[in-house]
Image (cartoon, rainbow, N blue to C red):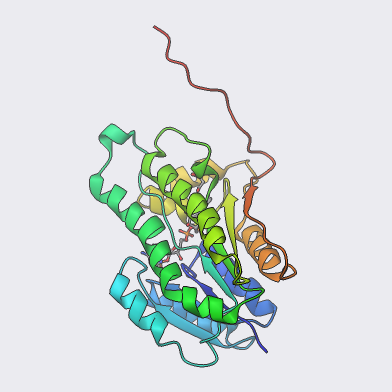
Amino acid sequence: MTQCVLITGATSGFGLACARRFARAGWNLILTGRRSERLAEIERELGDYCKVLPLTLDVCDTQAVQKILAELPAPFDKITALINNAGLALGTEPAQQCDLQQWHQMIDTNIKGLTTVTHTLLPRLIETGAGTSIINIGSIAARWPYPGGNVYCGSKAFVEQFSLALRCDLQGTGVRVSCLAPGLSESEFTLVRTGGDQAAHDKLYAGANPIQPEDIAETCWWLASLPAHLNVNTLEIMPVRQAWSSFAIERK
Ligand code: NDP
Ligand code: 8X3
């Protein structure tokens, strides 16, 4: 039977690359995001390879998520993989200069949105059973804090620990859970974070040979295609040119 993946945040970056990768393998796609026109374009691009269900959906809108995901039509009602990818960082300022509304938007999207989608789909995923995958997109920011990371780092730490704890609860169902934690990756992430600052985007990635969305899509594909008895718990991935730096020490 044809498999089906639901990808949140499929309108750009990792999510879009995942849509293309899974379509290439013949999986049916449920694609979500807030930008309807992009979803329509992607449906036109991938519709020849597989069945596509585009859903304009803000993961922060709990009622909409619950309603829309409860009413999935066949053949999209049996889901073999959920990629919880929708997320964002906003701002790079120190905590004491941050905008509270931006903090709340990160929490609402990266934590509340991810948990709402997961909670809503769990019965369906458990029904599909062995070999089903939940892939939560975390970040190296979960484990490696940096100045200006504040709430974004915290939200991704939640994603990692939630993923591990979810595994405990799902033991016996056959559903596996992975937290995939990428490092420096070139997508629309920095444009979103900086409010559209193209120079900041260009500077961050210049000469770094960063991860590309296709790299993450390939990794998600691998995770979802592993034999059903295997669970990758956490997977941190960086470009070769990225590594750690020393502690910051205040001297007086
Ligand atoms: P992009 O900005 O390119 O993609 C983000 C996606 O999330 C878009 O499709 C956007 O769709 C969607 N999204 C954002 N907010 C919402 C919302 N409220 N409801 C529904 N969809 C939403 O960035 P990336 O591809 O890089 O980011 C994908 C994930 O990867 C995020 O969780 C990010 O935190 C994580 N990540 C990114 C890294 C990087 O360096 N780029 C590294 C590590 C992790 P739309 O605007 O249409 O709603
Ligand atoms: C995105 C990676 O290092 O910019 O999650 O926070 S980082």
